[in-house]
Length: 153
Image 1 (cartoon, helix red, strand yellow):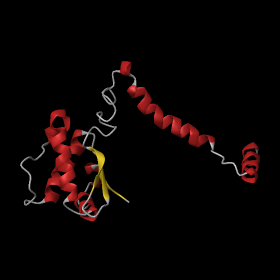
Image 2 (tube, rainbow, N blue to C red):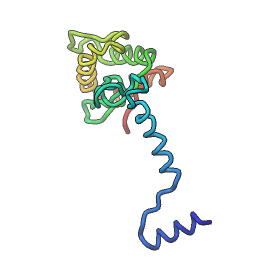
Image 3 (tube, rainbow, N blue to C red):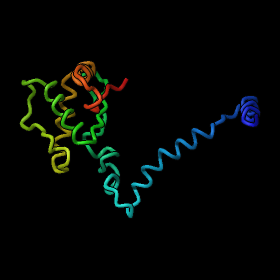
Image 4 (cartoon, one colour):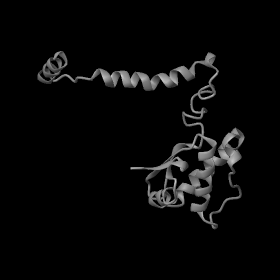
């Protein structure tokens, strides 16, 4: 009853009412990064400077890429088995004529020294075709969840 009354009061006064569940949910989601950013936690997820960690844009296998039509594909294959499936289908989607002197292997996933090459390969590869082409490549075979790659709608 009090929540309803508070909502009515905010509506009449023009103030925005943010439900407690939204605040709690936001706090919960941000807690993950805060806990792992603590240097004493021993976490490898956020142990490097911002932008160099697997989940903050440092890993090329956890990012969003622009396609030739200006639309995007989201890649989130953190686990090795998903990365292998992703790379296999990605290379298949490029075709034989894609110009590249280097091709990633499943071992590229854990080799940070190869990540700059992998990022360039993915950037160039996604730009070689449309988002709908890539969505078809990643979602035409089962199981589609194993690629961890989705079109951004």
